[in-house]
Image (cartoon, rainbow, N blue to C red; front, side):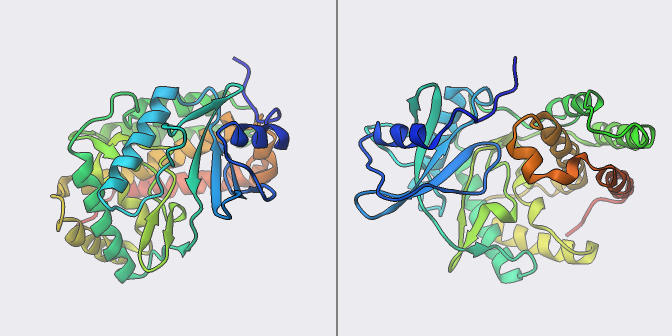
Length: 321
């Protein structure tokens, strides 16, 4: 299948798609920071700001996108601060010329501060609330976090990529294989629940508290997946941050401390999957423009060092509260 790009998603088509749902665009289209999908902010005739999100075809099925929407709407119904899709003409997911798209209210705020323990405590409390709701049902269509998707398939994607300079390939793939093998031996996912899935600081807007955005990667997995990306600093700092998260989290939901052993395997899975994602999407013109360093030999030399550091982290005793 030919890799998809958004070259046919012209401004006229975007406006036509929006107005096909009875919403009149009164401003220009402001492209927001998104590479996997295409996201635009605009002002409608009611003078309110909205966001239209056009999903990348060939990535999720319509059933998977609808399940993402339903999960967001369910969380919002419990007063959890999450940007859920808007219902328009009795549905949240719309189709126009083979593009799936949705509307969201525009939201603003500054980025969550990972080194601010007061904000970390807030986050633990709200993630606990999210997971308390998550445990009441299971995903049917969304995927589960797996080493097959994040490691095995990612390794295969990288092995087939022409972007990795020949001179660094032996060293790169040698250390990558060690990281993959050790992660495979350490990662075991049990007690999976519905997750935000990509709960990093960039997906958290802060204004008198957090607002969660972008459930595009929601899936089933271990609860700690929605927590570990908020950790920063040295081991002692991360231990304190995790203690703060868990204490607040457990006001609403019990946390299995055995999952602390999954933090470094999950970090390794994200590292490998991220490199493979960029390689897979490289034929989309937006990616070389946004990530020009990815095709530079210095990037791959740096990845060798990063993978060596991650291999050492995988060999350490797991983080403790």
